[in-house]
Length: 507
Ligand code: HEM
Image (cartoon, rainbow, N blue to C red):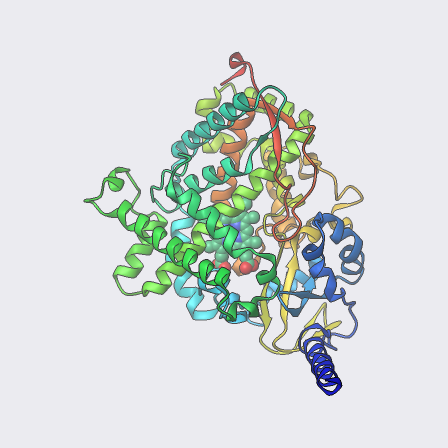
């Protein structure tokens, strides 16, 4: 009996040592930047935390002082970079710091099955192929702004009705409605696909929620090797992912098939949905490539704007003076909100509207942290000061870079739209400069910068214009003001109290 216990103890000790050695022991190189202890990544497992607290307590100081740290994430060690000049270096050398997404990093994972090999995570000639199809569809100049505006009207109606149901002074939970709205915009205007997402019982909404629930489980996000085992929850996740991908493809085909009732909408020929279907039909993409790129366009195209909307609502709720200033700016155009929201030219030139959106993206970049590049050979970051061995994963912390006091001054953590400038031309100049110096990296930069930026900014302008034209709003005093515990960084379960604006004030 005693022997068996001793053997078991020995085995357990060997197992612990192996786990430590294989996963938890930080790499020796680079040897001149600090290591964030591995257990910091695991805190949200054991405690209900606000990730801004974790960041401030354990990551902020070493990251800012040294510009980069060794950081444990997704069961491996990575280099997490903060300093703008380092990030600019990474953006410039896409072959050295090459994209290497989940399909290469954790190919057996549910996440890799979900998004596959796509335009965001691929590299080299595969990326060039995907980009040749996707870029023109995303960067056209004639997005259907009337459709965006009519969706924004429906959103305002949903929010107004929800407020009536909640009763005066009681906050409305906004996330679900913003999800429906951003799915509607992305599917209809980006992908020319009709899912009727703004009706609450549309199947796409429950599928979307199911996929998020199944995929983003902290245990499997932190230890993706567990996806190798056929746990019932992972089998369920794999089925949900397959159903979701199939539904996207089915919707895309039905909306473009002349014999389908869904094709009745006047979709433009050069739209992304049509281009993807043609790439498949003419043999440039196989089935999997169509599904992978369709899924990633759908996810990136609706999730990021959705998070940006939540954070913007939050910031404006905390700053009623900015809501008033925005309203004055909209009114100063002399146009009723209904036509202003469809006037891309006028909207793009409203300085305060642009500044508010940029300031929200600076403080709460929807992709707060991303580690999806891998050194293709030994690298020397910071003009040789940080030696990174070949094959190391490197990523950015946009949240921290956007708040860098060296770049943004002592008020870096504060919401101050005026920092962007006072007229459209100076704001544009400042925006370009900040991006080129990698001080503003919400859309990242270089050759691999976001292709949906133009659409995202247009959508945000229309949304804020309609919301400010319809309501004033504040935080629900009973809402627990906290950020998400892990993953994308935004106000958790935000609840807002809306008040309808006087209809004579512009709507
Ligand atoms: C506020 C909204 C958005 C933000 C903050 C955002 C942010 C980003 C970021 C940070 C990247 C770089 C990812 C990386 O380095 O791996 C990226 C890439 C990309 N985004 Fe966005 N995005 C937004 C909206 C959109 C929309 C609406 C679309 C439309 C489908 C889109 C499509 C893409 C694509 C296709 C890429 C890959 C570009 C490439 O590698 O060639 N994004 N986005």
